Length: 88
Image 1: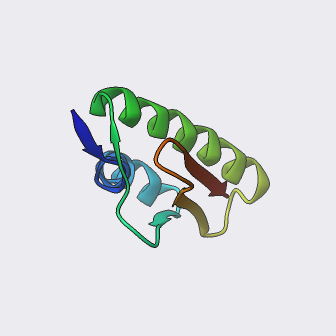
Image 2: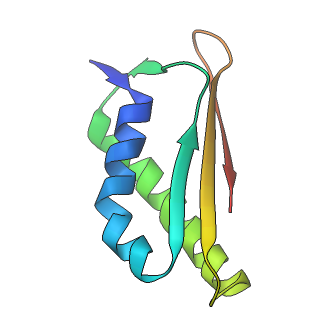
Image 3: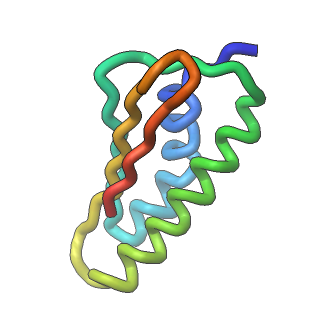
């Protein structure tokens, strides 16, 4: 079925919100347009979860005491590709 990728990412961030709040980490996503793909939402959510937890570990290792941000940019390159840029 068709999945709104931004919606899945926001759901994943919401799931981690309390976890990140305790560690002063903010999570945000940017996209110029809504992005849809065909697939299983749960598998896409697991990909985002893994990426965010890896980014969390890098942020905590780099700046353990200050407020940090994890930013994700999504770009629909064409009708078969989505580019994802993660900055922590």
